[in-house]
Image (cartoon, rainbow, N blue to C red; front, top):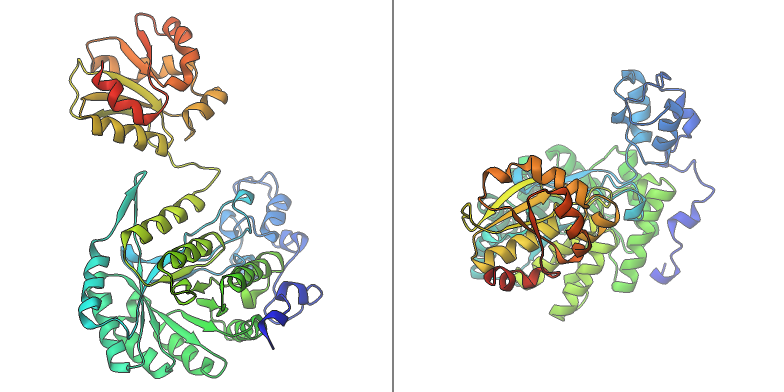
Length: 466
């Protein structure tokens, strides 16, 4: 069947709820198995409300602390997230995929950012391979208090001995998770065996090699990928995974171009989330590096996969100018919109301030803090920075919400302990909330309130002029 003729599985299966692998219980069916105590320990007002959220994939069975073992066993499969959890790698470099329950972030949140895998194939000579391993070990980026890095190598070779040697070296020396790529199931198993405790991903089983690859994955207790040229065939392989009780599986729809890829990734996620189609309820892998020869387009394509549901994104470069933007994009998209990244409230000394150093105040939204703190540090002016808890909101947002206002700021300043650290009573507020300066001076008796700059980039010039 030509790819353009493929009918999306979620459309074909509208009336096929009994199809193999499609498990869905109604809220009422789930409710019958719950304790029915309405204790609210799950975070919902009633057991029925919890059951309805569980049925829609917006709650987890583990949220109920009182469910019986028998009911948990019966509900476990049906209550599992629509997209299965898969772990590749171990320790600090372990990459967790799946457990997704929504199509759009604003509906709840996305759970696990995609992993960036660096492709090493037979075109990479031994010198370049060693350089890639060394670079992977050292390459990391810090942004708003989080350390970002690529965590996977995707190692491919037609030579079984070369594949096994490179897999072992890359795993031992970099600690990265490994996607082992070969058309030969025996080569996959041989390469994976020495590092099986680090959970490499075997890539990939086809219709012809499914039995051999899945058997190797089961014996080694590692995840494996399945791939097919059409979504129909991929769903059929997924059914075999469900029937064989394989839970750690990754899907490759083998999309030929970006247009097909966006369509395929969307169809797969919709089938899993909306139709609860277990054969497609697994994370996916994508290869933007094989879709074009243009280096910049590869990065653009990879960015599309970050936004459009891929669990593992394989690229063929460790150039930080291409790796870092992808990691930052994933960080932005996969931040919980209901819980912004935020700093702890408190006093932050920057550049070794003295009791006579200036005092600035801002909110605890991480991006605000790190931007302001970075500019203060760059100014080399010793400064005290007060960070006030505004539930992770920026200056203007928290002011509009009534959190970063005069009476609240005054209470915070008085209780912060800053009066014991500075000799003066002068505080600089962000320029965007200049309108609260007079009221704040009234609330902070004995303090002088100065309106600072609006943009963080102007902070160094402002501090040097004090």
